[in-house]
Length: 438
Ligand SMILES: NC(=O)c1ccc[n+]([C@@H]2O[C@H](COP(=O)([O-])OP(=O)(O)OC[C@H]3O[C@@H](n4cnc5c(N)ncnc54)[C@H](O)[C@@H]3O)[C@@H](O)[C@H]2O)c1
Image 1 (cartoon, rainbow, N blue to C red):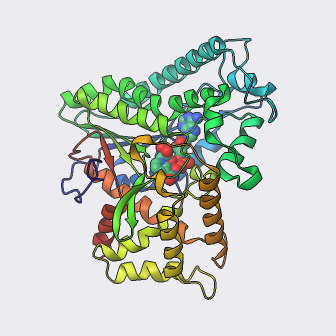
Image 2: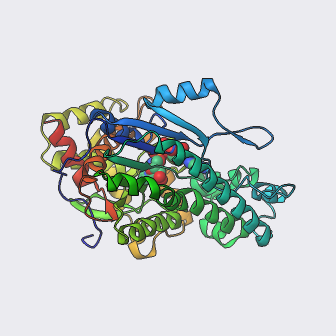
């Protein structure tokens, strides 16, 4: 555990103040991680600026937001949105008159996808078109942003983009089986990665979840130089995932959701931050805990480690406020079910012979197995069933707390960031929450 660069102390320095500019590089969703950062930026009195990924028409063309959509997005963000579509990935791009990667997948079926091949020269042409489109749009965004940031201001860029699942019917069915299938419906994630379909998807994940961070850092070079020359500072953050250390049998141990197919892209993201850091640019990837959001809900069982945060809240100097969180969560459980019983279930899950081999940092992201998928998904289902209402879960309460805490930790750590990659584990999250609510 010690070899992971993890935040171990609450940040003390302060940099951002009223009049500084916060730029959200991705759209804001109600439960999303970015709400925590936006909250801190607003509390510091910063001006908030956002972007949009745009919207696709039925004929696949990418358009900016309509006036109505823009007004709704700006109200949601509490700031101005630069209305140039920044959809990343090349799944729906192609040179004029040629098929897009999503169309190339159109002929695949659940019967033939493992042996179907893809024309890689065509994929490469599409990738270039998609990347060029993104970079051109980004240049337009930066041109508008230039006019919105005065000399001497500090600027905080928050990257949140992750995704890249192509809208191909066959893949939606496969994803359902890899991330949610048990027994007869189980599907091996390794079979996906060994297929042409899987290799294409990994490339698109790289584009969306990793390369966009590099494009952002490169595309804002002019702004960064002007700001730094005028006495301001520029920071970049991105959300990573590379497992989390959580309390298991009284100790913080690293564990991970399996199979995290996007893990290769997340490691690439870490590499991009490292390369920027080596050039003196303050860019930090924060590897964040598993929570439930619009994006993570496809991964059944991803929320299991989050339940252990309850124990950390008590262990890390928890007082009345920590007890209130226990009570709130306890009230969501069905009659006769206790939090202690639930925590014993997740502890059994983590320490089981099935899950132990997956605590292998060097082998990450490991492929799933039938037994592991069965246990992960089964435990998740069992826990949901022990609630009064399957739509009001203790992981909703705990996800919101993690969003709040990571927002604080990331925002203030960037005043004086210690390195390009930092894990935010349950210990520091519980410490921050206990301190701020004391
Ligand atoms: N939820 C988790 O458990 C978890 C854990 C660690 C890290 N993260 C990371 O946190 C970040 C925010 O995710 P979240 O879970 O809060 O979900 P979210 O759904 O709120 O955010 C996803 C973001 O990705 C953007 N996005 C999606 N597809 C895109 C595309 N094709 N082009 C450009 N942007 C695109 C969206 O606009 C949005 O800003 C992501 O980088 C995610 O990987 C999430």
